[in-house]
Length: 245
Image (cartoon, rainbow, N blue to C red; front, side, top):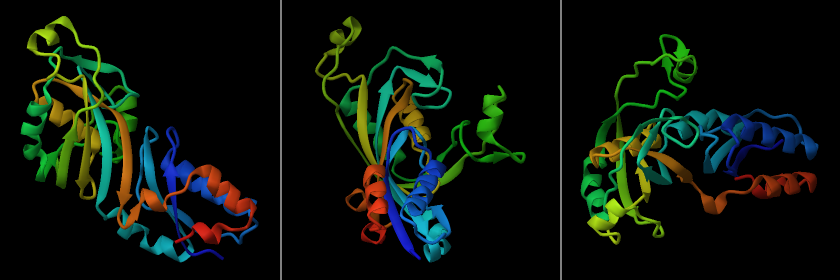
């Protein structure tokens, strides 16, 4: 019976629960004894990267993993805010302003250290006993209280150059950005989509997340993560022990 952690490099479009199901399927494929399986931290379907999957005795530590710090890489596209704050949603606000990298770097200290943020309406948080995303999908506007989180580090880098509008050229095409890529180290409970929204608002524009990748969760990093393909190969070879930490 396996006990320990399998660290998945979760692909785009797969939810955390589906990741757990994939590991259970791999165990069946390999003929391993039935064992309790759980994940150590939700990752949105549109996010990729480190998803710790606990097996057996390790499931007793899953709660501790949920409380751990995490590191993400993400991209904010400026000009449109969606109701989900990512690519999945419908546009609810637009703004023609595009910030320069220097402007972005100037506001980042506001979002470093202990901060307050309002989680997205499309989240698994419960409001009056119901999931916020269920209320949002029903056309309601769940009222979610701000919560305190900690951003240990936040840094930005400009993405490859993109086409600019005439108005942007007047400001100087070498300065303004359609999007920006950032790396952030956060405490438990931090919503990256909310962080992206708030950074865009601080820049007097709007934005949404177009890419989100978790590179570290607690002690686990991408260097320890495996793809679903490798997971199944190891299972069929009855060698899941090789990838269990």
